[in-house]
Length: 241
Image 1 (tube, rainbow, N blue to C red):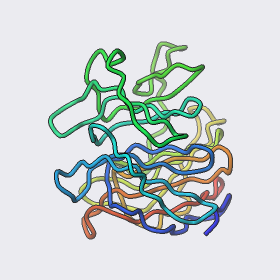
Image 2 (image 1 turned 90 degrees about the vertical axis):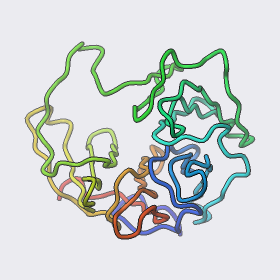
Image 3 (image 1 turned 120 degrees about the vertical axis):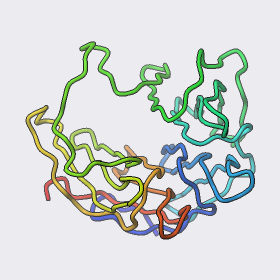
């Protein structure tokens, strides 16, 4: 299966290992799914699962995380991925991990531990620096209220193509496949609209967008009927439904 650059969500090959709450990113067109919670023992095994759209197949890298966690984020600078913090099962970690994407090997930078433990946060890389943040606009030094989603969602996924913001899945005790889209060019005066639904109902799943191809990914997660999910999908929902 080759990657689609437009159209509704379509199923991809299943993940090698079912996971919920992983860190997810795209590097050189390949989708990386790192860590998370799974059904194995002890429940966090730190797997690195990689999907190659050209081959239409997943690969389980031989080197797992040195200290497996869930609820972590990841950013890429050059040919290295950085995974700070996360939850090893007993609270927030301060560990700062580095995955060499060229070799697939991990290292831990003892001199660069976080000043305080963090998990369930987001992170971004800008200008060669890594930021752990919660969505505040540092330039405005203030929050800006936008219209409410049509559906309240816990554990959803989010994607953007630079203009449109998509939020889908989640809700928590019940899960939904619905996806909403918002035109960011409308500022705070727009409204959310429903667009193409996910293939699976899921929450706490890995989600990422490939800036090169424009493809969105939704992988793994959890739902009440199937538990931890191996199901994966990709697509680009209609921004103007």
